[in-house]
Length: 377
Ligand SMILES: [Ca+2]
Ligand SMILES: [Ca+2]
Ligand SMILES: [Ca+2]
Image 1 (cartoon, rainbow, N blue to C red):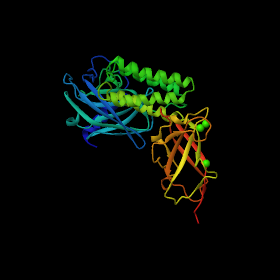
Image 2 (image 1 turned 180 degrees about the vertical axis):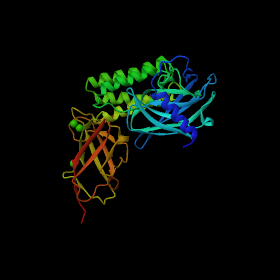
Image 3 (image 1 turned 135 degrees about the vertical axis):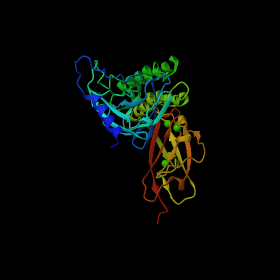
Image 4 (image 1 turned 30 degrees about the vertical axis):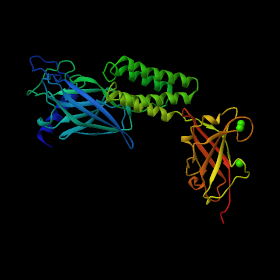
């Protein structure tokens, strides 16, 4: 261990652990708050969870170098990466858990009017509004000190602000409560400058309120659609009216919420080979298989988004845009589609084939019909 590392460990332990002494005529414990930290956080998805990357800068008006940077972490499952010649450790005290980065050497401290990247956290935890703390370098005098109230507490003797960091998803999960959290992230982002204007904040709060109302009315499909709109808008707003922090809060929490909301699938009636029963299919045929999507009192087949439709185990796409006709002669309009047999993936011995897709507006549909494979010897 380098001597300066020992020194840092000593000061960290002083900052964290020493009881206040009530003696007179001792040198005061130095203040570590003469720093002007600005923190920019960006979040990316990885295979399992997220990476949080922090850029820490120290404004030119600062009088001290930043040599300790801490971010609140609201989960126990995370790992940290550090800039060159910095160390990281985890501290849990008084219900606040932080990852702590400390500079090992003078040249790597964040001097006034400079910035440093490389502070990273990987976690399954979702982005939330978390505190950060930054402390200035203290040249400790020798001997004992007079501890003013809190000066031996790094959570006190540091400059605090807000950034984003991971939080465990709520357990048990309640979608409406989660939407309250999303609304509060929107509200908190405005004064922090992560959302630049009230109109944008109101827009997102409106989406979340609407989704909440739709869920109360058991309309999961409408709520999902409202949340998909949020995902489209955060992409458009990213970098102009949304800073990276608000983008991460709104996007990744909305995506998480969508994952928790069940996709409802409308069951539809299909008729494979409308003129045929049983529906004989030769899997080796170079021809097409006609499939009708039928309209009934609960479902209008003319609303099907043909571009989304797939048929058979291999998911064949229709060979044309389909046409509307009353296939079954019951007086309402049905949708007639054709699929190349060889694209369907239907194999000898299969007894059923399914068609799926969505209607215009996004709701999923699925229907199946029996088949009888021939020409298989
Ligand atoms: Ca048929
Ligand atoms: Ca009908
Ligand atoms: Ca019909």
